Image (tube, rainbow, N blue to C red):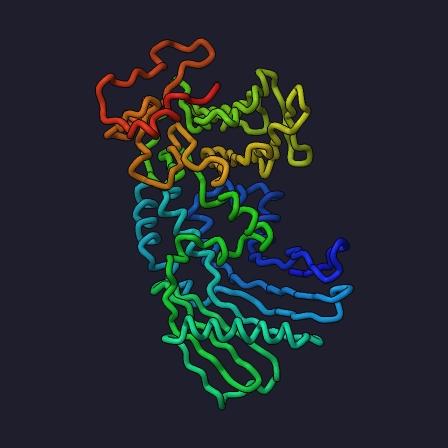
Length: 439
């Protein structure tokens, strides 16, 4: 990360993240796989990706620079080092409860379960940081602010602290080593200063970091992690494969494809006109009046408003709004068996492969506003089996059938009629379901 001067205020600086936290080996593997005849990482199962992460050394450099003054160069604080996965995190990734349940799901023929997704994130966990801090002509005010922060941290974490005033750092610099221990959800920190060494041992964290691993995984740059974290990318995925459906809120259901169209997800508030349907091996995306259909058996050919379209790896297809000319959908081929469909104005991304579809929706844009088989996206697992009229279904089969819809003049049998008597959601949350999306 670099701090650059703001031209409107010479003494203020704007943070521009340029540092990278990325698994370099996995990046090269992914690049090679996209141009090879074998399926890419995106078209393989979650178990395959987890196994490859466990075989891969996860380590990457990280650096940041804080500059201030008239040109933002006269005074600076610099941090550099690396982050990696150590043996403790690797052992946890193979022995954690999610990994054990994923092994059972693999034996049952379900390698893309919700537990396998969590096990994959555990395998990408980078838990050890080794950082070095240096300074150049830092003013006393900034140094005093750093000392104040140090005193505050000592005050907050004093039960875990040991301050050795006789252990010196021969390099004359400040080195920080941090290790996150996922098995006990604790953080150990060592700060090596020129005149002392401060240790914080097994600081208990107030929340489970392994449940929100986006800061510790090694798959993206820092800037992309921040943006994706704000919009809920990776944490808000509905997965539909040949066997199961994993909702936004991590409820796993058996998939029940039929000859009728089934609503996977849609914005029930009607603020954004978006809906995704499936029928056997066909995915339909409806966005601002444009309709795109994808056959999982032949992803290089698809239809837009009923007209055939071809796509290749070099030339993405852009669908625009007829009135405003804004980009409605951007379709890009990632491999012969995988395509990416992005709706930039709606904060939705789809990864479609021959195995099924992943629907990534924005946490900020769609929280508690979705309906369909993928769930209502309210963060509560127990509220996911709710039909379009608010009925709470007892089985996954009933819930799946409740979202059958009659499109394209299909049989009236495709339109599911929910019972007049059923257990319903509270009245204040039922209204959004009754509104429904505009198909």
